[in-house]
Length: 138
Image (cartoon, rainbow, N blue to C red):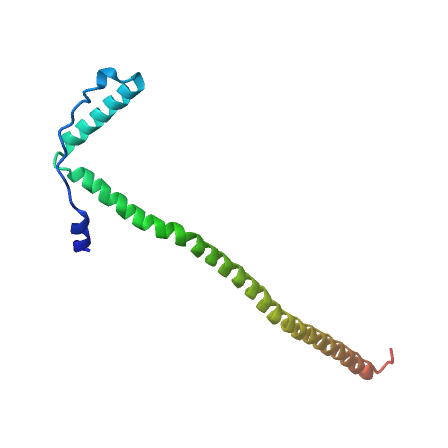
């Protein structure tokens, strides 16, 4: 990592900014562009005459591009894979819930029918007992 940093960190001293000798002969747009160029070069020279600021910005741009390109190429694929995984999980959940709920509903129905039969038999047995005990024949 350090060797890569040293390999790319090669600041060069900046030349002293000078105004173009042909400034008076340029058109208005060209003159304004030349003045803007001179002001920006003068500001850069005032901030870092050895070129460290320019090299720092170049290094950060290289780093940002080297990170951004893989991210921009891989991120959509990862997002698509996660979306597909979510859809598959939803389908599997629905399928397995159907497999589980159908037998449970059958078992529940059978238990309800058995319970109703048991309750019915119990009621019939209670009536039969009360009829046998009744000495008056009601």
